[in-house]
Image (cartoon, rainbow over all chains, first blue to last red; front, side, top):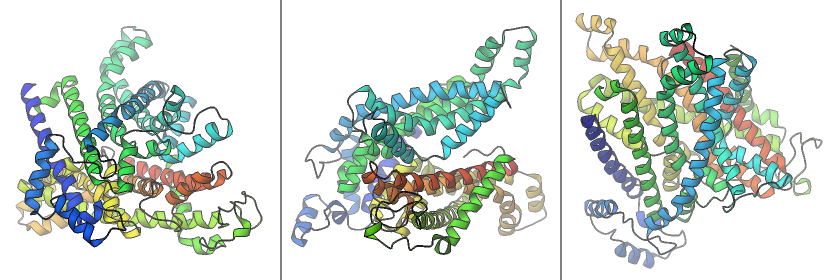
Length: 305
Length: 267
């Protein structure tokens, strides 16, 4: 297990360094970075001054070394708009994103896992068919459109919930539901197929043959053995939730990481973009590592693979 | 089977709408008519109503299908070609091309797809060509990985060993014996990726990048509809329904293709 951990950790460090390189490359290799960083209506004199000040006249290798050296210390420069430490701005938004992602993940697991298990246990009944239709629709419905429709129904027409922003528990409801809808659909489908696979195993037959109650057969013998793919997907989706909520956060004016990223892109505030994208990528990579470690822990065969 | 037929039917409807948009629409999607702004669905001459500038919503939704399918098809072709060729090479040659490709894939998969596509798009700029470029740059890696994995497993099959033993050259081995057996996976991945690309394009245009107004893209139409949500629900409803039905149709078709050709494939 230790060797597996060390190998995975080394791989993760490499991926993080390469991801930082990719972020640097994306911003620098697509033309003049100064023009990217600047508003559209800038004077030529200011451009030259700006270029010198940010060190864009140095060779690319020097700039890269400087970026990487600063980035590993958490220094992505100063926001061009807010004149503040870029990473500080990103970290400031983290609690909001964590809250939303946590709510969405909890909702996903609470709804999707029981739905998937029930659909598998009652295979080919009306319940199974209805749940299949719901999950297929849930996967096809774009989150941002669902968000608009919910706002229209619950905020504009019924006036039950606020249209956006953060503050009370009521503010969390719609964004969490929108985020959870898509991921629930996937988790429910996977749970159903994982449970169906396990139900066919001999040990489930044995458990039934020795006269165990159905709740024990499902709860103990089936669910535990179906857990691995479900845990994997849930972990990967937790990573997606942290980084992929750009659209949902924007619709509901949720002051999180995703909205900050979109605003920074719109403002061409590239130090913040680089900080936010790098941070998201690192969190995402760490989530993947965590999933792999959990996987190795749950299933010893993986460690040797 | 119902799902397969539904998928096929919905996809056909979208294709017909996209191809036939100029004839089916009955209106120019860009033609403003300020006297007939924000008319609700069912207004004579405007079955889905009109937007804030009096443009016919049906015409805009139909032309939106044209744009969405065009972007989806182009992106799938580019990613399948680039990812397919690289995956084929990496799987066939192994050694360093394989190692380089896998590290590259790791890096790219350390960014959420939508965030990567959005950031690339913000950097390379707006417009139709650049959104296809951005989606392709963010999406090719899935093919590369799947194709590489398939090639690695196909290479071990007996008929490939037999052909190699008979003295078949490497190029011929690759194109004649390996590629045809990998092709079904490429088709399955394409169908499963298609709706992701179409929805991502809509999301990116919704956020103000990608395809810009007045071009009738579903994403930018939805974005504009937010300002009129209190008075004109139909502007938000119909482009979204069109988008969801497109995604649904192609998803169902993709599920069916996967179940038929490659049940073990994980994307």
